[in-house]
Amino acid sequence: MAPKLLWVGLGNMGRLQGMCKNIVEKAQVEYPVLVYNRTKQRSVEFSDQFPAGKTEVVDSIAAGVARADIIFTILAKDDVVEAVAEDIFKACDVKGKLFVECSTIHPDTTARVAKAFQDRGAEFVAAPVFGAPAMGELGQLVGVLAGPKSSVEKASQFFKGVMAKAEIDMSDEPYEKALQLKLVGNTFILNMVEQLSEGLVLAEKSGLGTQYLHDFVENILPGPYAAYSTRILSGAYHKMSYPLFPVDLALKDARHALSLAEASGVQMRNLEVANAHLAKVKEHDGEKGDIAGIYGAVREEGGLKYENN
Image (tube, rainbow, N blue to C red; front, side, top):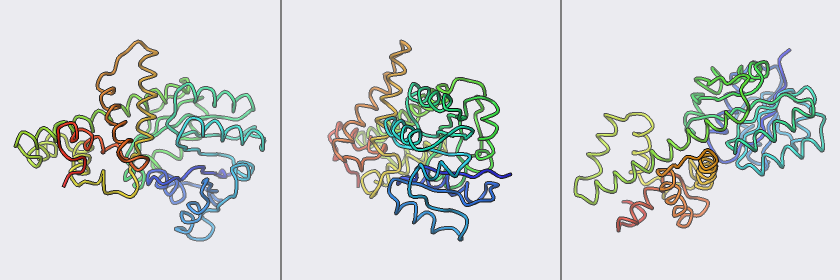
C-alpha cells in the first residue's frame, strides 16, 4: 500500500516548494500529500497549483502527523526543529512512522532529535540536500541520507528520480555524518562566492573590467561559479525582494561549520573571511540580505558603493 505523506515547511524559498512540488507530481502515492507551513496562506497558495485531490492543507503539524506514515520536515533553524519535534511528541503517537529530516542543522542537534524519535518507536532519516532553488524546482538536487539501511531505503524512493538527481547513501552511518557533509559542503559555496566577489572587485578596481573575468569563469568554471557570477553582476543581491540564499541561513551554516572545525582542531581561514563579510551583509540588508551580498561587502572594503550598477 502506498504511504500517506506529510510535508512540513514550505517557507519563502523556491527550493523547498520545488521539493514538495516534485513529490506531489512524481511520487507513487495514492493519497493527497498533506502540507503544513507555519504561515497557512503559503500552504494554500502552494496547494492551489495542483488539481483537486493531489494535496491537502492541514491546520497543524499534529493533525498531519496523526494521518501520515512518512513525514518530511525542512525547517530554518535548530531551535525550530527541536520545538516542532516537542510539539509532535506532546500531541501524537509516532510509533511506526518514518521522519525524514531535511533541515540544515548542527550534527549534534540531529543526533538529539533522532534519538528522541527512536526512543518513541519511530524511524528517522537525516536527509539534508544540496542544490540551488532552481535545482529544487527541476528535481535536480543531491540528497544525503543517513540512518538505518531499512529506513534509508524507505526514504530514498522520494529522492533520486523525484526530488533529486542523485543520492549520497550513508546507510547505517550515524545521523550526524549527513549534517557534517552538508555543512562542509556549504563552506564550498560560501568560499566560492567570496572568491568570485574578491576577484570581480579586483577586476573592476584594477581596470581589467568584470566582463573579461566573467568570460573566464564561464569558460573555465562553468556551472555554479558561472551562475553566481551572473547573479552577482546582475545586481540581484541588492534588487531581489526576497533572497535566494538568505544571509541568516548562511550565517547559521557558517557558525555550525566553524563550530565543527573548532571541535575537530581545524582552522578554516577562508570561511572566517566569508563569515565576516556575511555579517556586513546582515548589517547592510537585514533579513533580506542574500549570500551574494558578500560582493557588496567586498566592494565597500575596496572603496566602492555596496550596490553595483
